[in-house]
Length: 381
Image 1 (spheres, rainbow, N blue to C red):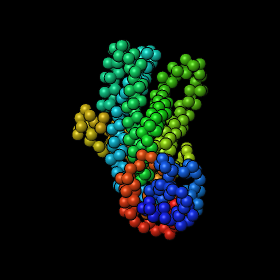
Image 2 (spheres, helix red, strand yellow; image 1 turned 60 degrees about the horizontal axis):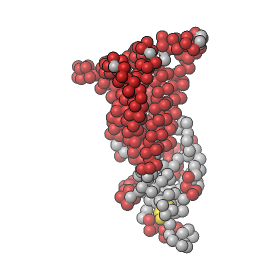
Image 3 (cartoon, rainbow, N blue to C red; image 1 turned 120 degrees about the vertical axis):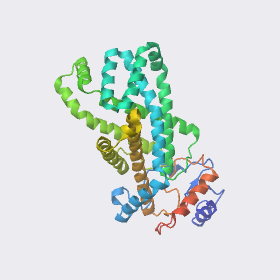
Image 4 (spheres, rainbow, N blue to C red; image 1 turned 90 degrees about the horizontal axis):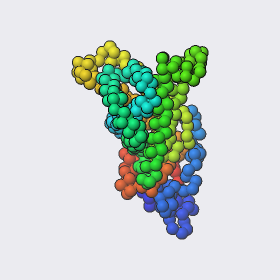
């Protein structure tokens, strides 16, 4: 909807009729002069008339959610964005792994060897060789190991922030909202998310690694009995699931330039992402074990290729879950009276960095979607 039309409609309803006319956002709601949402825009309350929870959406809305998720999978180029996330993930993986190994090397050679044995048991063949060679070089040069332990965390955080930045861009594309947050807000957000996610990832890795002999050794050092270790071997998997769920929830909540209904530990999209990831990972493992010919095709690189494909599947599942949540938000907005052909359908967190090109693109996307079959009207202000 053109801004001028929104201003005229607002004046007809007694809003903005005196003083200067408020500047208008592309979704028809006014900004202040600095491009910020009005003071009540940060409310997490649902729009008037919208279902207060997804379970109260009518059946036709759920069908629209499924159709929209499938349609937007192609429109938002999720396969390509998952590939970009895989690239940044690999860039972040090895600096973090080397820092972890260097820190363990300072703790002691025997501890490093046991952790390396666990990693080798969990890593594909060719990737195992790459990791082992890098670790052996680090262990052979104590000076390099100490240097990485000192400066490596900074390099690892900066490398991993590239992944978070790519996910922020993907999340904005999924929610069909341009990035409106200034760089001085986005950069601290990227770094803060990176540190938080790295902490959760390290905790998840330690849960996976500390098993078998290494777990018994740690238990003996802490004075923990066999019963506690048996409980740990069972409890660690639910704990790992909680950590992975927390990572997804934090990304879904903080990454997009869109106000949702507040932070949620579990959303329909995150559940869908976990189900798709576990199912696809199991199916891919079965395919590799029984039908694939990666060894003949890629030779010594087969393990690395398999790992990259699995990482791509993981990122694709996370993006699909985010897309599902975005389509749920769209249908809630439509049920509350938001025109189906108007973008964006969520309240932006910030619009100060929006350009005229961004606003034109929003209007174009709304026209391209066409009349979405809603008779509701959303007034400016």
